[in-house]
Amino acid sequence: MERRKFIEKGVIATACTFAGASVSNAAEGKKGCTIKVLKCTVHHDLSQQLRNTYGGPCPVFKEDQEFVVTSQYQMPKGFCQWAWADIRPYIQAVWHGRDDAVVTCCTDGFRPVIFQLYRS
Image (tube, helix red, strand yellow):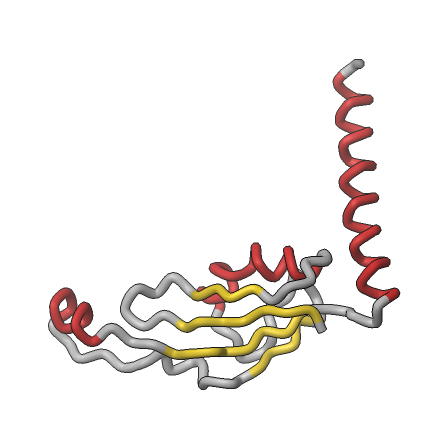
């Protein structure tokens, strides 16, 4: 198969896969993803040892706070851009049809925030 045809078929297959997941979400009345803040943690020992400070929890999030993602490409208002970059692959999975809830966290080693993602 020539290269151009191969790439063309791959693009069509990918588009069909994503279209199927979007149609599936719409048919079930689920149009996006909800992010719930489960826990804001802080590692005082590491902060003291490595930064010589007594750090507090992340100032951006509060426990039980929820964000509704209406576009898989656009960060919700008031959301941390670093946390968004960390959890975006999981948002994509939930957006495109993963039925069970996902628990993930940002990669801040001193004060990680734990999130639950689920279809909404």
